[in-house]
Length: 469
Ligand code: ADP
Image (cartoon, rainbow, N blue to C red; front, top):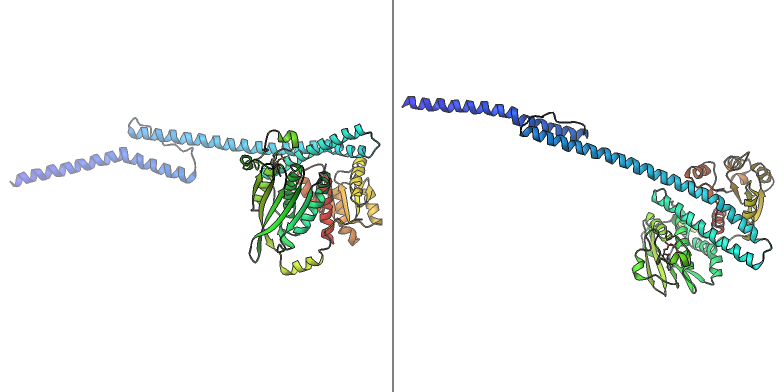
């Protein structure tokens, strides 16, 4: 019986050893390649290196797994290379698009500047009725073209995220006065009544981007003027919410115009959309104005919507959060509240080497009651500045001998304090950020891109001359 147990024991022991030997050899054949594969996956994951491959190439299942894994990694590597290539192509075509747009707008602005200038000069001469009508049409068309170029430029800047929102203290009631002054000519021409209603609790001074608010309101009021054959336009400002340091204002631009169909109200804020296909034919425009306006409102963390009844009028409602001014500055600024209207007899020095541009800009300024001296070169300007004081200087950037940058540098280094502090606006046909940055670097206060609209010119001048006072 003992022998019997011994035999059983040896058989069991033998089988155990056999099982152990078999398991060890299986481990080197199956488990170890799988462990290697696992290490490889980790290495790829950590180093993001998709060029690594598994080296097992046997005919068995582990070999299949290894080859399958290699194929998968190869595909990921190829997809990654494709993605990098497409990203590079997209980036370079975006840059090319921006460059093209900047160059095109520059190329278009230069001849347009001449058309606008010559038209204006021609309108000052003796003309018969027929010629006057033709000239008016040229004027309308060039203004339309200018609006399109400006819209495209603004749109491309917004698209590339290049617009920055400023935070400065400004008088909101004065902003409205200025909009009224800017639109006066169009409003009178169309016999439209214009008014604004500001809640008396809205503070006189708030902190935010006045230039962008002005742009939004001009776009909306401009549309109202365009789409209102008769009646009135009103801007209303109310407080939506308020804390100790912040104030959210609601703006309403209301007109009694043609109105917008309900189904179109949602899409008019999209780029290149108008209420109907006949809109451009009848009223002009590109369908970009509201898309730009919406982006400008949202860039300032606000919202915009429209309420309208076809045939009865439209109200565009938007809100923007602002910061409040401290009590001290409010009081200080209230004292200087009187300078709201266009101040007459501001003295301006205008410098441009192009005689036609000079005459044209001078005629615009003189019509707006500014007293204008002109210089055809930087040298001549320096002489005039020695003899007289000015409230503002407008200068072309590209002039022979001494350009606008050098001249500004000389003015900013003048020994005469009044001269040193005179606001300078650059006039340029180039809309590149490089050129504009250079203007600010040499101490200029603002810039205007040629051809400019009269309202734009006046508004920039008033901005600076009022600031100085
Ligand atoms: P544009 O005026 O250049 O065509 P906008 O984006 O400013 O482009 O306006 C888009 C469209 O919305 C206009 O073509 C017009 O159909 C409609 N619209 C805008 N404002 C008004 C308004 N105040 N009254 C009626 N329709 C308007």
